[in-house]
Image 1 (cartoon, rainbow, N blue to C red):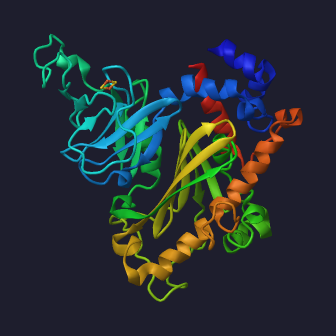
Image 2 (image 1 turned 180 degrees about the vertical axis):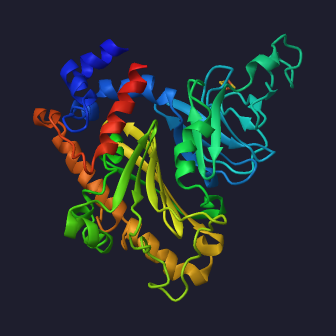
Image 3 (image 1 turned 45 degrees about the vertical axis):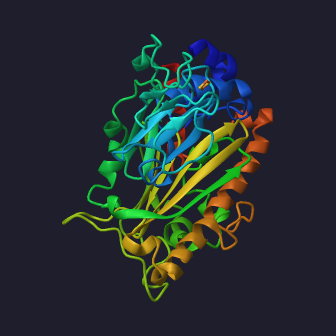
Length: 406
Ligand code: FES
């Protein structure tokens, strides 16, 4: 695969990425704009990873199912009768129609719309009506066991559903370990969904990962991050977060001594503040925003989680599946609505429009779309990183190459 990567990116660009961050370059423009590189990611990168594909709350009850696309592969996510989440290739074993065509609830079977072959929610073939000319198709020699829906390796960690298409990624426990270690004692399992939203932006999916630095905050998020940034960023030029990189993980972790008020909906903001995420006895609170490569971001504040799962649709088109999670009734109760809305205003903007650039998310989309335009220029092949602020991005580019080059 090395040859193909070299053909697309160029040997010089790869050598530049491999240099220490102080002198490194980044992925060249073609990695963001070309169909070839996008195709390469679909074949040689995403299948080897634990790709985030949805939130557990998207299919909350037994019998809930939804069709998704992972690149060009149609996949079914379904919650079986026992309440477990399973993933299958969304391909009928008769003559390869998709089986599930829309999000559904209360299913007992997954039934193909073409000739009504049907499977239970664990993928076992249950019906092949009239296949052999009889009503229940029981006279055929067909080995029913061989024609179950083809499973996809799937794992759930708290709110997140992951799939590993090639089946060879390390166990999910290892994948999430760096994040789990960072927030040890923070009981994120106590949070439940308060808001789900899907927004699209016209830029490459990698630009979200390239954004995991706080260097841009005081400019892109003017008016939102100023309070947090003033002390360290404006007065001393030093980031208010420290960066950490490990395997498929990078993070921005609030430095000790930062003001605890890192979000909205707290006691200084509203009469009824949101409940804090509980801490285990003796645990210290960690405020951080992290990425589990390739495509899952997890922001842990003191009173909510915010997450984006990016879904790469095309080199220049990405869907951001966003989830916001609160403690106890924080996500649902009327008494917490002012605090909850304050949090959502901050992330999604008061307009709640992906194009309005009045919240953190849409402000980021705006600058990523500007970057996407610039990436078509040959000048964009030469970028540099700040060793103070941008080590995460250097790590991401190297990790992507490591995985593709295998
Ligand atoms: S293609 Fe699905 S039942 Fe025939």
